[in-house]
Amino acid sequence: MEAQAQGLLETEPLQGRDDDAVASADFSSMLSEEEKEELKAELVQLEDEITTLRQVLSAKERHLVEIKQKLGMNLMNELKQNFSKSWHDMQTSTAYKKTHETLSHAGQKATAAFSNVGTAISKKFGDMSYSIRHSISMPAMRRK
Image 1 (cartoon, rainbow, N blue to C red):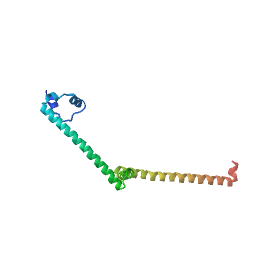
Image 2 (spheres, rainbow, N blue to C red):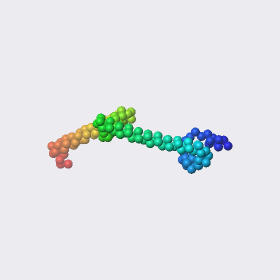
Image 3 (spheres, helix red, strand yellow):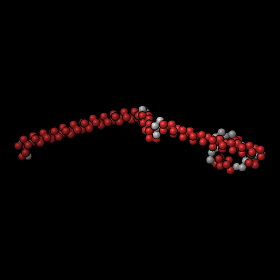
Image 4 (spheres, rainbow, N blue to C red):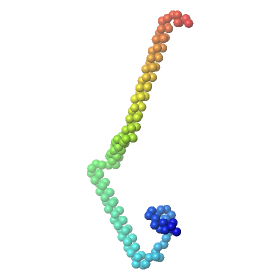
């Protein structure tokens, strides 16, 4: 019994099958002729208001386009501005700054590591060159 009472007091909007149940219900038999006429008049009035609002919106959209054209604003300029703003917003975000900092630090470490490897390789080649020159200049080592 409490579950039924709670169902009648629900504050959630209608969903899915509730919409279907309401749509398939026939309430017209519960209305008097006077109520039906009032609802029909209200329906006509609402449809007229919706039509008027659509016309006003359309006129305002045309006016907006005209103003943008006069200001030299076109779709490409708007896209550029939006992209620039988004890029700026991204660059100023905390996540971007932390990532940039981390990658910059990693790049510096990698550069240092490659430099050390390059130095070590150069030193090895230098040592090998010295060893080869030294062995060529010493006849005793050539006989072995």
